Length: 110
Image 1 (cartoon, one colour):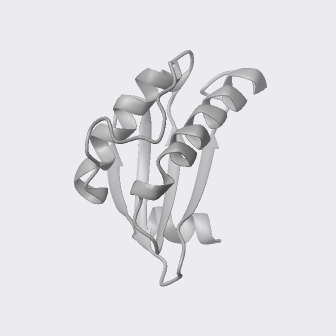
Image 2 (cartoon, rainbow, N blue to C red; image 1 turned 90 degrees about the horizontal axis):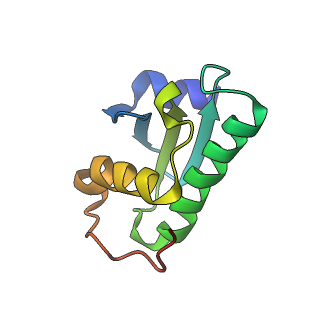
């Protein structure tokens, strides 16, 4: 129900590999939901994409505003991308929303 609420009423941001929805949640913390349908690939490919996206948000949690629900939907193009490519894509789309500054991540992974 909460996923649907964010996807129906939230701000929609598009990248080549992801659809990202943002919506204020009136809580003292942010929540992140990640989904990848079978269009992305088999279970291994879907889980890898979700792990990479989760790691991106873990490394950047200090740069993300509190009180926002974020839903990331992986598109078919996300399959096979590495951490660096996914990070660049998500940073580019989230920069205006969260005032990301390039290179500020706690640690870089490649």
